[in-house]
Length: 366
Image (cartoon, rainbow, N blue to C red):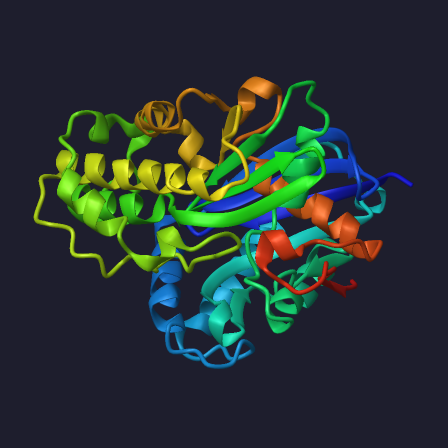
């Protein structure tokens, strides 16, 4: 039976809330509906950065000390506003929506300690929007010994199966962290690859006051510190086979030399591209095509570097396939909510390292 699901995503790049509608039976994607976006204000973004800094001290996933309590309230309200605006704009009646997939905002991800924390009050959100809300997608996987990430590969597989092209296909999602889905027939392998936009965004914000490097223009003017990139790639994470996952701040302690803004941006963009390329030898076969999604798909300098690093594979923006680079993760959490309602697996041994395929998610009702 087809369901109408709305997915919500607030990623590690802290830019805002993505909203998207999908029609799905939890196995295939019947139709992609409209999408929307509710940006965070500078005040909200600053609060979330503070919450990320304080979350490193958490030892229990339900605790919300200090600024985390206020950050959770702000995240919940932003998501409620995003849904209200989206449904009003597109004339969607709440009774026509079967489920909302609410990822929340990740503030800590330490799967080795069986700890993953996403803030956002699903019960309050369900009451505000008056639609059932599926949330807490990652907890069951982490509790069972999985990495709890990446979660979108099962959605990437559903999309890739609609393409008439030879595999393997790799979908690269570049958010705060980068991750890949390797799809070759029924084979599905996934992992985080390393930094996405997080290191770059933080550096650009720190040195220029801009939230990100728009279209990669700053990096395009800079020179790459190849020694830094080579040294960073020697970290044990990059040689480890899939599945593997990262916290947004995993590489924050790397000692980037004192560089001019353009050179620092070029270096960190090159690090992101090289880290993605470094996973290819760990896959069963090199990909024939690579589809790039997430915020990084708009970074033209990063796309150029990926084409150089991943040749002879084709590298294209997800939008060129009729997918949505911007709305992909929001769509995915709508799809995952539909799968979760049916008890279908969300994660697999080769995507998160969990021992057996796992469903997940909890439902909050209005």
